Structure formats: C-alpha cells, structure tokens
Length: 110
Image 1 (cartoon, rainbow, N blue to C red):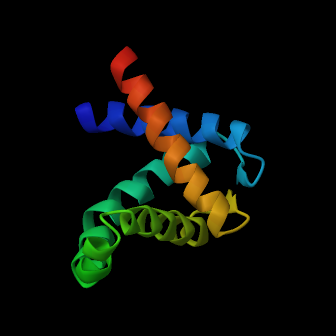
Image 2: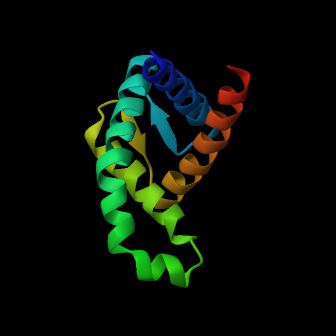
C-alpha cells in the first residue's frame, strides 16, 4: 500500500513539475503515474549500475555527477513513456531537481 501511495505522490509531483517547467510535457495524470512507475524501475535497476560504472567521475566531482545520472534516467524514461517528453538534457536536469523538491514537500505533507 505504501508503494502505491508513493507512486501517486511522485506522479502528482511530476505533473506539477511539468506545469512549472516549459521544457517538460506530460499529457495527463495517467502518463504521470506510468512515469512514476518507470522511474521507480529505472532507479532500482539502471541507476545502481550507472553509479558503479561512474565511481571515479563521481568521486572526482564530489558527487555532482549523480545529478547527471539522474538527468540520464529522466531522458531514458522520456523515451520509454508515451505522453512524457523532455526537450533536452538541461530540462531533464532541472526536472530532476524540481521533482525531488516537490516530492520531498509532498512527502512531508502526506
């Protein structure tokens, strides 16, 4: 049950983030929920692999390269989820940051 609530929160945060950022487009709430599910899967499977492969760069940049990995995950989700488009890498990076902030705020509320 907690996973479903978490998906709803991330979906709502993604939809709200797309209203804030003009370079990110989500067609509706169903696409936002599918995006939340795909992001959960990608964060569980792909992200740890990318982190392990980029440990030297991550250490060299004092962890800031993790933001790049988050943007790559968003761009990958954009290619997988119909109804979700991101105009470029910078928008994916900004979407990642805004999504994290809004999700944290919604988690504190709910």
